[in-house]
Image (cartoon, rainbow, N blue to C red; front, side):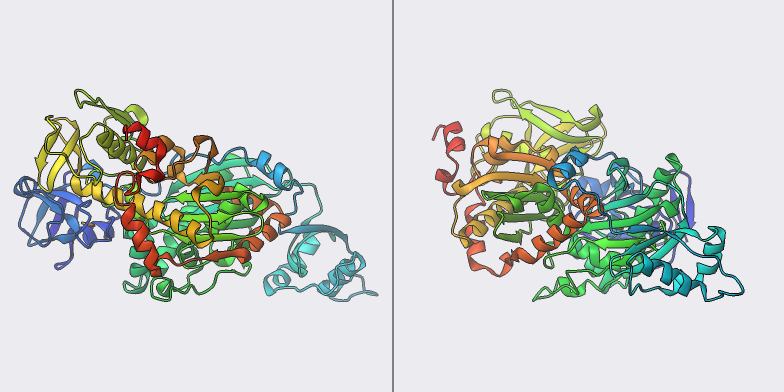
Length: 621
Ligand code: FES
């Protein structure tokens, strides 16, 4: 049986396979946020001709079904089929994407430490060439020369010894010995001045960012970023864990992320004419699930009560063993994690935010595929993951999408005509709404009276923009003859649930340490989303605390910034490990109080309007 695409491509498929699975095998990936469960409605295709059976219709409208629209994950061909894949259903991963950079990293490093001390150290050695009178072994000769320079008790791995004879002779016995603390020998090279490089990588659930760093100067040579190809298996860490464990796909997921890192790095090295061997250190930071998958460890217990990771403090690894195509002997450092749902990306973030050095109380919020919060100062730190879910990245929202070209990232609604004006990334035709656009939309609908405090559409609103849709009332933001972009009542509920989880997390953590929102001196917002967030609007809907706006700081991608700091300096690695040791994780999911806080936050902005004085003023209350 054949599947024919409107692009002209044709391929065989096996009976019993869903169209989603069949396409995946051919390297055609569709957006599949729910991992193929039929609930997200993102894997839409149009069956132009052919017989098929389809199960759950997810969030398809009757007229869509009548016109042949189906969910690829729930559709099984009964013979040859001809299908068309709409642009918005196609997942383009692996492409290099432009994402915001963390701000002035070298300036940050200078202000925090400034002394470059990478993991790999070097010592010049001049060995006496062997002769018939002195023909001791090459390794003993090297060991002796190293001892004379004070390096005693060095260990030599097999890979080092295996290439030793050749390398010593090629270097005519004048060598540069690279080693790590221990001391452990890594590799030797001819004694000559040469630049040295390292990579820092942020392995996010959604995006992967790699910085190529000059280790002698600390400067950023180049930056590459891409979507994490694991998105093909689901948007959030839970769907990935299920695929890794129940679906037996751990190795597949691991290969996806390793390929992403290598595919970003190779063109960077080529652009700057740098040999892979010259890249001698790697540092990775990511959430606990991403780090387990990167390391090839079973992440299954992360999602089972009592939520136990295999480990939080990872040992040093070798780039060659990890599959990263730099110097095979390069040490690979993993920024330590805290708990199952608070990972090394947060430790790196706290390090880059400097909150652990300040005596005043800071609040750090990383809003990405999930939401993590840290509160504390130079004496203590508490943290929690707040299950905000990937809604702000488009998951669970009818026309939700990530902040890429075509995403509505900002909008206003005219309070008289209810006509919206949209700010679209890339100034192109709107394709969907991203997180910041969702927050703007809910705020504007609330302030113009389209929705009430519970997020429900107000019956008395008289505008054609509010119409009756398949799932109930919806607001039409954009329409052309190809597609409509709406925000439905269900979407608004999901957005309110996510914002409530973040606010409840902040409230509960503060309560646990006996503080109030007024004790917070600084709020650091991190994560890709944080770059586009309108703080005023996020406060208006009750996602962020109503405190003076000047306390808020946007830090961009702090995970990569922290990884960069750890790459450059031993002091920074020690601080990261100290942060990890010091930070107390609080499991919000087991707290009854969390549910109370969460329920109170399921209003715009909150059931207790007294917590939001500037919003109350805005509303005239
Ligand atoms: S509905 Fe098909 S992947 Fe979610």
